[in-house]
Length: 447
Ligand code: ADP
Image (cartoon, rainbow, N blue to C red):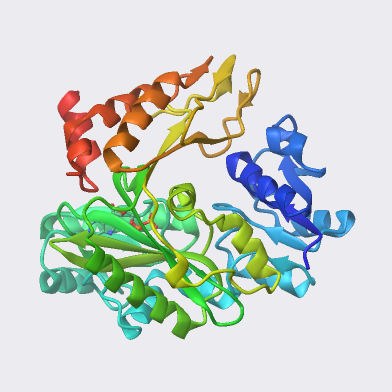
């Protein structure tokens, strides 16, 4: 049983986890940096512990401080949220070795999927199609040249330890390859402390489609259908929806069954997401995220499953409360990531929010830690709110999205709301004809 849970995160996801705990009668502790002393999660948690100065390396990434906070508050479980330590296998192991429940997958699975080459090999062994590419890290520029010829241009240089689109470079011909390798290695070393790179076929105009899975400690695995996250900027998701407008029922069922079989064979526990690129009717696995994802609410909307509650129940050893046959897709949901960024340049716009009016009404959910008078600190991710709309079908969902984005007010700092409002009116979005490069081409065309 979990009686008191420590949230090792900040912002909207910390709030999301606190809300699940409150509904489960679980006491909460939130850790925070000095930059977040006045934050909403700190106000709403039963207890809070300041664990360090603003830089994440000295606070949200400091495993020792987090464990010390768990110790002094008597917490029995730790939820890492997303980002920060959520996919750090050593942290998950430390949490368990100190006798706390880690609300997430087994450390060995975090480790396995954190190495993107090992992840692809594993999936291939489990019968899941992967993007063609090098079977290991590239050892030298000469080997890269040879491999790229074999794969065929364009190729994508990727970081073995990758995440957040960093260390990724598209290479259209051999002349660009060596420079791209150098640049990607630099980015990967700075971002992940691991400069190893691999090559993949660069798919032209694919869609990003991912499957959400949940596995319990008793061997049951289900999938909660797919999310389509094709509206991206610099390989980062901006708008996500569920279900995908391009999958038919037969393909959905086939992919779902494949994913569930693979995860059951692996013995995967807790929440996870298998990410795929979908092009010309075929799926190619790219990576697995062994954590809660930013876009999980669209799945919650269409399945009526509270994913965070299930994560906590699973971590406490309880079996899943439903099986695959009971899960149905109800209607359509779309999420918009509202960030404290300039809508044209995407430069971060931290500062004081003077006015905040979240939209409401039927089918509208807003996950946000904002309040009027709150100052968005400059140190962390710029996500300030997630607007999630749900309706009976995609067309009405888009109407609801436009209506609620128009109601949403953030004053004091620029945000991406104006950009999201134009995206939602676009014909290509209405027709569902977008791919992962669509948003950037669209922005370029509009100047
Ligand atoms: P990260 O972990 O850095 O987010 P991913 O492997 O999840 O990287 O890829 C992020 C995005 O990059 C994808 O959604 C897609 O838009 C693009 N991408 C990744 N691999 C390929 C590929 N082989 N071909 C085309 N686009 C790709």
